[in-house]
Image (cartoon, rainbow over all chains, first blue to last red; front, top):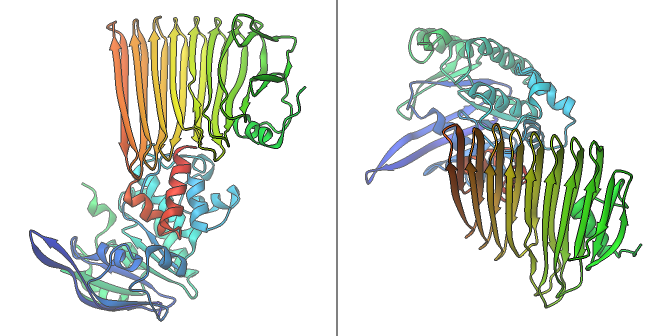
Amino acid sequence: MMLELSNITFQVTEEGHDRDIIHDLSFSIPQGELVVITGPNGGGKSTLARLIAGIEKPVSGRILFRGEDITEKSITDRARMGIGFAFQQPVRFKGLQVLDLIRIAAGKALKPIDACDYLSQVGLCARDYINREVNSSLSGGELKRIEIAMLLARAPQLAVFDEPEAGIDLWSFQNLIEVFQKMRREIQDSSILIISHQERILEIADRIVVLSGGIIQKEGPRDEILPDLIGTPSAVTMCSRMP
Amino acid sequence: MVRLDEIQKRLLREVADLHDIPEGAYNIRSNSASAGRKSTEHIQITPREDVSGLEIRIAPGTRNESVHIPVVMTQTGLKEVVYNDFYIGEDADVTIVAGCGIDNCGPKDSQHDGIHRFYVGRGARVRYVEKHYGSGDGSGKRILNPVTEVYMEENSIAEMEMVQIKGVDDTDRKTVAELKSGARLTVRERLMTHGAQRALSAYLVTLNGEGASADIVSRSVARDTSFQKFDARILGNGPCHGHTECDSIIMDQGRILAVPGLEANHVDAALVHEAAIGKIAGDQLIKLMTLGLTEAEAEEQIINGFLK
């Protein structure tokens, strides 16, 4: 198994009361598979991604990565062990350039031409972007694609994408699907976890997990789970999100 | 030509990126004496007779030439005030690299106050780079109090880059500029203070003519218990554009005071001030940690990028 979560509970304190965001949750991501987690907003999907990356710590339960217990490991340790995480809301950095971030992600002094390759894959004309500052001059959609390019450069054992389509326009979305299709084809012994309720992304999943109210409602191979989701908020089309 | 020792050479590299004698006109000042000087056909450097310092005359129409006037100090307890006047002829286009490096291993304070005055002729363009650097583990302070005055004729351009990243204990910087019609001034100031350092930077920019513009941007980081004050004042006396910006990161117990000052004395004066001070955003650190950096490495990357 690439990743195993067992009996994970995560709480927040609201007005003096503890509330479970994730409740006694267990599931696994097999090696060589693409797993998509869907479910309604507020169901705990992003929290789950943050628990896997180590940004949040569970109040109880264990997380195993390739058989090793990482529950107490830091964000940095987990990153170095092979967990990559693309944020839902990419972060802006004044002064740091796109090339700097891609180099940090790759963990080596990539040549600009090699860094460009990752940008081209996410549909950005690399020459125009490589020296851009990752500041507010970039649009949300551009940042989002750079965020994904960083994970391509990092090539982790387990890549976690939190709503990669959020903030991306319809045209770029087609391109994004192709990026994930290519990743799926080249997956080999790594694994991919995507948080999304996009039908097109669910269609390329090996397994689908439906998370709602902090617990797993359904889980199984795509062909078993997807048909019942079509037409519900857990499997929407890109256009249905347009106003 | 005075021989420079290894410390002096290192200071020269830090402040002027100089590994050897520069091309073009230069004056190297080392421990209050000239360690070498060269004028060129178009650029005359002569010592002043009234006070310590230089008069630098750049002939009208001089193109793509440079002047280097670095200062290095390695003698503890040395205090000096230097007056350098630059006369940049009409339609000239030149680069001036100044800068001061102090290495103080002794118990007494070392201080260099450089008073630089620029007279920028009509249509001329000058790029000015000034780097300050301090090193040495003596108990004596390293003090730099630069004064920069810029007098700009019609349609002249001045682009100034002032950098002080390390090792200067105390700085009181004053920059004064007066701009005539169509003149354009841009300033990029980068500053990092650490330990118990103190850095003050005050600007008074007067935009007198139609179409004059000034863009003053300071990026700074205050660490440990250091203190910075950025005081940027722009006066718009005609149809002009003025912009000041202070963008700062505070760490540890660092403190920063940003004082905006805009005075519009004409209905078509457009003046803007922006200031933002805060610690490094938590999500920036987390993002870089998810890329395998430790928290300290992430901080270093963020600050290096910010001050780049």
